[in-house]
Image (cartoon, rainbow, N blue to C red; front, top):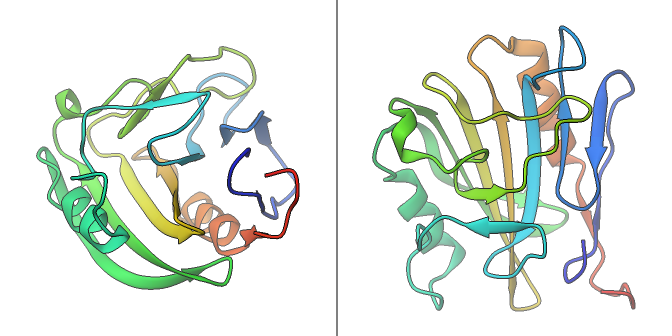
Length: 177
């Protein structure tokens, strides 16, 4: 990702990467994804557009933005916001389920992008889906990571999403950023 250099470990078996925007996985075939991990820099992306100012004022802290995300209408808070570490940096983490599908962007929840119908594609957020977000401040920029699973994804896939995000490495010294 241009701006905040990151890498992560992905287990073999079914994960498909779409450039610098997301990875997705289907457990039943190559069509609709059961899980997606999406990343972007808040307020700046070539690939994704935030849907409204869900994160509050541009000068808000990641804790403020996580608290605002936790109050998103049409959702049920499961966890957070809580302090975590991502890539060696302090971060905020929030988990919730979708109760009303009219509150999300399309195809993402907080962001939208041009859908790609190749590999396992995320066709949109639905009622019952679980949304996990992590917000990390890196060198004055905010990295937004969202890991979503459809309602029937299963515990193994939810754990894979968690492990992939926990494997994120952020390298501020990357000269190409």
